[in-house]
Amino acid sequence: SSPPAQEAIRIINRLREAGFTAYLAGGSVRDALLGKSPKDYDVATDATPDAIRDVFGRKRTLAFGASFGVMGVLPDRRSASPGDSRQASVEKVEPTEVATFRSDGVYLDGRRPDSVHFGNAEADALRRDFTINGLFFDPVESQIIDYVGGREDLNRSLLRTIGDPRQRFAEDKLRMLRAVRFATTISFQIDAETANAIAENAGEIEVVSGERIGVEMRRCMASEHLLSGLDYLRELQLAQHVLPELLQMDHARIAQFFQKRRPRDFPVALAILLLASPAANAALKAITERWKLSNEEVRIVTTALRTAPRLAIAHQVPWSKIQPILTDRDAAFVLDVASDFAAAEGLGDEGIRRVKEALQLPADVLDPPPLLNGSDLAKLEIPAGPVYTKILRELRRRQLDGELTTREEAIAEVRATQW
Ligand code: ATP
Ligand code: MG
Image: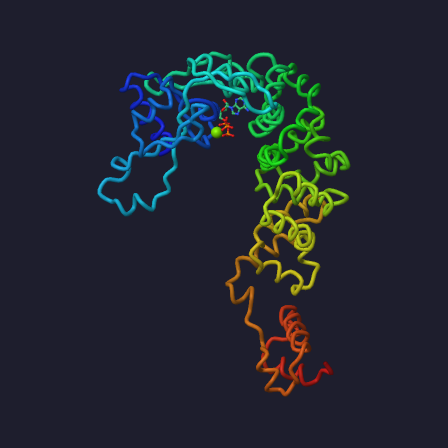
């Protein structure tokens, strides 16, 4: 098992030695049973935050959300990498989340409980959102502990709330979108009652912040199954609240654009969706504001919208219009978008193949040094001024398009032309 899994198990063993109950909980148990590698390993225990601090010491514990009973436990430096303190100090130290079994009090704001009460493992399972997220694993006995029927739902590929879906979604409206996210990323069906409860209450997703909605939507869009995620958003009436742009778009066209079944970085998926949209720039602006996209995300999506369609037909376009895209830092990203665009628009893969070949070239071949520079122009007694930019740009274009190959040709060209 992975280092973070081993670390979580060490923490569980330590809590056991101190007389507490402790299990792996939530997503890591679900993912392991699905044969996927978990993102992180959370521990649930009957030890209170104070007891957790006593067991691991002040130096190793962080109060993540002590009022919710969530502590962070850092790896033990002494056991981490013996004999090499220098390495240990530069190593990225990820704390393991250790949470006290709890049940949640009343929900007042549609997002978070007003208070929590420490409780037992069963109560802790029952406060979780979906049955497949309510499982524990006891690494000492090597046994799953299932109070909620999660294992059966995992076997049936079914996403179902723990308890009455109407009540669970009324408590925390974000769960409606989490349902779509999990159903999408692990390709599960949403149970009929759970789905009906979402469709009936979808409008209430509006109480959740756009940023938090963006977190879930990023995960949906990055999934290889995003088409079924988009279907769910429509069917469950969430689309008009979280991605209204979708309703302006032709379903069959979107399916064309995402015909390659593969996971994508979120900005790649967003750029492809926008390329399928009739009003890409307006949609990007609205989504940026709603989900609080980073400047970096906006920059690369904007670049892709402008350049990916050209890369897709690279074989039909002068090289001087392609080469600058490939020497830009966003080249790999744009190529990723362009390959889906080419497939969607039935452009064949000739352009994409050309681009991939070019990206394999040595740097000085893909991006050859200019034939002339500004001081060469001065030596040719061209008066300094904005014309330099014009001349150098034109020489560069002709060089890239293979019309000029030597300095001498470039000099002759400069002399022969009335700039
Ligand atoms: P991943 O980390 O892959 O997103 P996860 O299941 O670990 O999946 P987290 O958001 O990290 O999801 O939450 C950890 C666990 O906490 C979940 O498995 C679930 O049991 C519980 N949980 C998280 N969010 C909620 C919520 N809004 N309502 C109820 N339980 C929740
Ligand atoms: Mg998690």
